[in-house]
Length: 344
Image 1 (cartoon, rainbow, N blue to C red):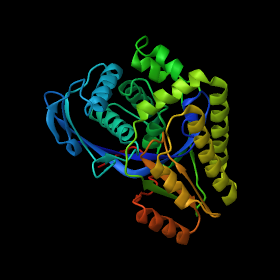
Image 2 (image 1 turned 90 degrees about the vertical axis):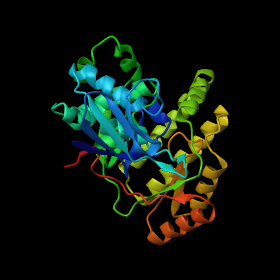
Image 3 (image 1 turned 120 degrees about the horizontal axis):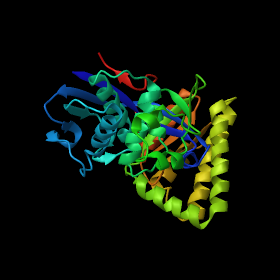
Image 4 (image 1 turned 135 degrees about the vertical axis):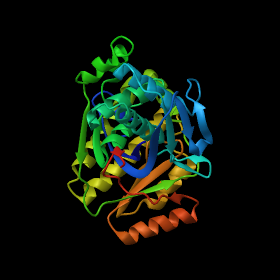
């Protein structure tokens, strides 16, 4: 039996901007892991314990199976032949029935891709797993997204990430073989692990409602089409704040980058008319913003999680208490340094 695991993610800085060519985000892997086991079988089966799916035939068209189905399809295209197997997935980012938006689909993709490679006796490294997972996840998500979650799940730690040119990828999908695409240098792709200041604390709070990332991406892309100059200006400035955070020269630079990133996301909301700041996210930011701390939404917005950063344990505990008093759930998560992992 093959056993793999992959961490989830939290975007620290640069969300939305990373969707644009050449822009970067800072993303951290967090230890809400997806665990995948592969067992021998005479046909492709799937069990997803968190959704009550048990030994069902792996088929297309099923929402909960789409990630696994896309991974199997991608690996079949890459390897030529794939041994049938039973994929068992467990662990998901949910609280009280709500998705909390920590990249479970990306983590599941990376864990399944790695398990399938191992099960089929194919050599792999993190770069190969990233590329195959990116192709698989990109396909399953309707060719949307930047792959920040894939990068975090595969490489672990804190990553400065510049997405590949997705237009370049789209032009090659279906026209070139998967093995050929994987062997190419992908334009613009940069994945660099960075070290955080040792006293930097990143707190994650769940607002109690889930977001629809696909819907938000569509609405923001509508804004891009209607006001390209304003859109580009905002994304350029968000990218600048992510780059400032990535170098982390001192505490004030970090706090300023988070505050400025949050203000630019608010500007994006105001200019686009797309509601990315829910009242709960706004409350989280208000409760977490002091002279010595800063906060912002994390990811697409519209629900899910926000983050606060500070450098003092007393401030950390004060923020967590204020969240709890206002029905925001502090998540007891740490940065996962391993990334994709084959468990013995």
